[in-house]
Length: 133
Length: 133
DNA sequence: CTTATATACGCCCTGCGTAGTCCTATTTGA
DNA sequence: TCAAATAGGACTACGCAGGGCGTATATAAG
Image (cartoon, rainbow over all chains, first blue to last red; front, side, top):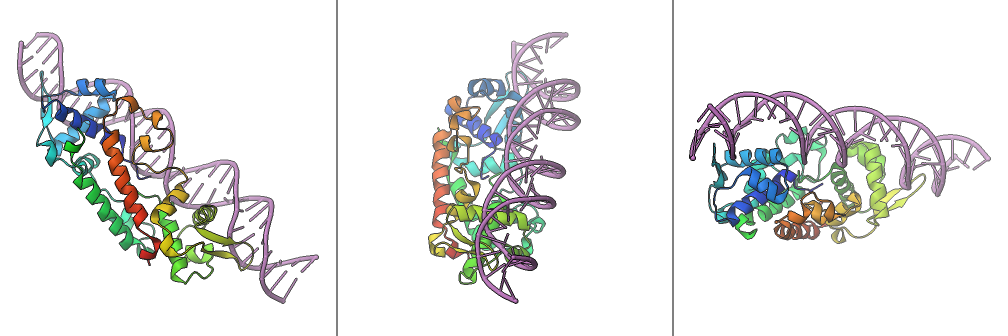
């Protein structure tokens, strides 16, 4: 409940790592060994971050990843939404198909939860990767 | 990911309901029918809220529940922690046994996540049930 | 004292999402 | 041509949220 996924954690650690080596190219192997993260899982996380244009990938031998923009311009929120793919909401009514919620029409707490949702988004958006180093 | 549980939602709805009828005694049956919530699930939620001293239970015929204190003095955080039972953390290192986290010793983002954790707690603590009515 | 109406509480089942593994394809530098 | 790297699909194992069911206990009312 209210937990970040391991994928997001791994993503943040990887991004922090790349930033900490002055944006020099880093490989999945290198990062996964250093922080003891399952290679395959991390690999997929990196692929998502690449598609989300948060990092840049270089294929082939001597390849790897660098940040696509400065660490000050990457928020934790960016990382979360790119990795999760879907809109992150504390309740179903703030995600994909609100009406799917079993209590949608009778729900009396949509508005107050909306306030909380808004505040949470603010917290995650204002925290930048540069503050993690 | 980052979602409140249905139990917490049900708890908030129930508490809001009781507050909205001026703290008159309310039954599980009444609430579950009005908001289309599975009775058994709601019943257990109410039992936890009772044990957590957020509401008061009256057993037997004509029984039910009332709030244990004013709606202004019940925060969303109170409801969450009583219903979940365990410490709520966005990562394993803020819950029961931090060392169980698979990357605990190598984790480089404990501190920044701690800041986020702190901010989240603030958001949930400052929102009172009285704002839900 | 009996009955109807409540809460209290434990057990179990099911579905879904998270995390992780395995395997193959593709790219590219040396 | 080979080795090192990313790209990505298929599959499995596991935990937990959500819900259903059965039973015990308390109590107001007739």
